[in-house]
Structures are given as C-alpha cells and as structure tokens.
Length: 481
Image 1: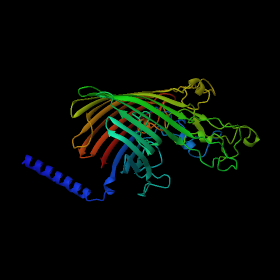
Image 2: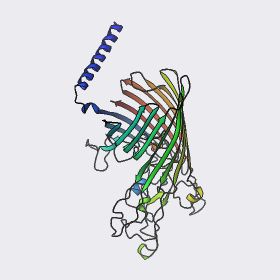
Image 3: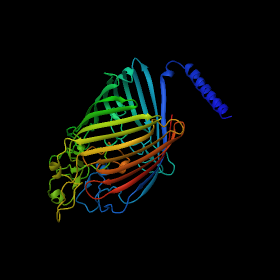
Image 4: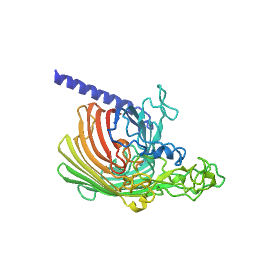
C-alpha cells in the first residue's frame, strides 16, 4: 500500500509538471522569457537586554540626528538615544517579488520589489503594527520599495567559464560574509565578475566595480542662493580568488578583496555661525545618510562663538560624521566537505582590516567609543579598533528545499568599532552595526517543499566604550517560489 501510494503521488507530480510544460509551451515566445520568483517570511523577534547596560545617555542615535534636524549640543536635553535597557517583542514580515526577463544575445533585465518599514539598505523587514512615516498601526497598509533593478550581460554561461557585467541595482557581486555586507544589501552602480577553469578542479575568479554611495542634492544648500560644493561618495571594490577541488568531496573557496570608500569620512566645515537649525554648513553632506551603530563619530560644524550664539553657550546646532576614512582589506575562505552526502559540513571565516584607520588622529576628534574619563571634565582615551573577524561551522543538507532537509550552524565574531562601515553590515547581530562581539546559534528544517522553519540566537556584547549587551532570538517561517 505504501509503494502504491508513493507511485500514485509520483505520477500525479509528473502529470502536473507535464501540464505546466504544455501550458508554458503554448504561451507566446516573449512570455516564455519571463521568470517570476519571490519569498515571504513571517518572523517572531525577541530583543533582550541584561542588567548592567549603561542607560545614562552614553549611546547617541547618530542616525536619528543625521537624518533629522541638527542637535543643539548646548541644550539641556539628551540627544536621541539607542535603546539598551528595555526588552522588545516584534512580529515582522518580509515579502519580495521579482521578475527576470531573458532578452536574448546574453542580455537579461531584472527587478524586485520588497517590503520595509523604511528605506534601510540592510533590511526589508516590516514590523507589524509599527506606526512610522505615516504608515502602519491599526491594520493600515505598508510601503513597498524598489529593491533591485538591473541590466545584465552574460557570456560563456558555464559554471567554470563565465563573464557577467551588471548595471543598476543588483545583488552583492563579492564573496564575503555579513560582518561587512548584510545579505539584503543591494549594490548600486556597475560590476563585473568573471571565472575560468585553468586546470581540472581549479577555477580562479575576479570581481570588481564602482558604486555610488551618496550623491549630493542638486540644490544643496536649499536655502542659499550660492550653493555648496558636492560631497559625492563612492565605493570602488576589487576581489580575486579561486575555487579548488581539494579531493574527493572536499572543496575550498578563498579570496582577497580590497574596498576603497571615497569621501565617506566626515570633514570639518568652514568656520561659521548657524543662526538657526536650517542654516547649513558646507560639509553637512559628509555625514552618513544611513547608519546603524558602532562607528566612531566627529562633529562636522566649525561653529564660531560670537554674540549671535551668546559666545558659544546657545544654538550649537551640530551634525556628526564618521571619524575615520575606510579602506578595507578582506580575506575570506570557505572549506566544504560532502563526504557524508546528503549532509554537508562547511567551515568558513573572514578577516578584515581598515587600512585607513589612525587611532591617534581619531582620538583628537571622537565623541564616542571612549574609555573611562581621565578626570573631571576630561573625556577618556579613544578605545575603538580597526579589525573584524568571524569563524563558523555549518552542518546539514546543502539546500532547504525538500521536506526533512535541515541545517545547524554556529559562529563567533569580533567586529571592532571602525573595522567596517556600520551602515552596511549585519542588521540582526547586536541589533546591527559594529563594536560587537559574540556568538550565533542557528537551526532550520524544511517542513514542506520550499517552506522552512528556523530559529537563530544572537548573543552580543560591546567591545569599546560603555557596556552594552543584548540577546536577539528570531523564529522564522519562510516560503519561497
């Protein structure tokens, strides 16, 4: 009876596939070149803070300051602060729908739309019931954003012999981990990737590109008849690596990458006296347009004390920029063993250094990531760093596609304050950003075809500055098509 039922289900599946193929074959030629795909994830998230975190005003929310009105540092109120002491529980939704179209002759175009409670580059999560930016709460509708949109040319088309050029907004073209690039980050600009098997089992690859990070408003500053010079920011990246089949069931991928961020550091403005919060400085646009937390910041406005601000005691409207330039050297590796097929064992790691980091220079201007005060009215020495690394182990089936597929994982990371830009790396560990260390435990199982149930536990602790610990627990139900 069991064999008969299995044969019946197999026959029905083939009949369904044949029907789909027949229908697809009757479609117009142009319609057959469209491929739709997407996924939906419902998440239960718990964010927990143990006792002992510093909740006395030590964690300014620089993103809130820099994306709003400048903060008056001479005032008597706290700047916007990051939550470090109140537990939160959230139900979150991620829905994405994409289409890829084959234009023939090696050209394709693609686009994807996605949910998101704001335009964050590192997440498309929408917290259900959240009311912000005139949306959410009381069952009102949520926003949809353009998440991908690109034109791509591909030559070769073989796993070990391929050249791809992408323009627009596309997936990360580099081999990396989430200590530098969150999985949701989309790269804007132009990228090239290529691979070619030079010997049996040895396939070198390269990747590179130029990516605009920020483009100055055409009318900046809007309330001045004479405009300020642009403060455009770019990322230039290059990577070289190789895939090597070491032995039976054993393969290795390794790569070295260099990322140069042009003009992302904050710069001190020309001396001036802002008369109100809208009176811009000529380097205001050197502040990040998005950040999470962890990087070291410096004041941007060189405010002159005079009678208009009561000789520096009032109206000290200030923005904040990154205290260091960023030039990242990254070494990434992954060792895979398939000898227990269908179970796969993977060891992975990445090491990153910010080559542009100068601790002495930062100590003169840093407003955060400092050690204990050296005395009355004396800030402590700068305590940040420039190194990030992660090491981890994954065990399980290669993909969670069929019912019963499973996976387990563990990793430990150490990401110092200014090793990478906090606006682009993992948004879950430590609730996003840098200046964190700790472990991640994960597990997932496919409960049906293309439907998975997973759980992850992130335990993070701060490295520099005041104490800040948190634990994040995620329970995900995901389906893709």
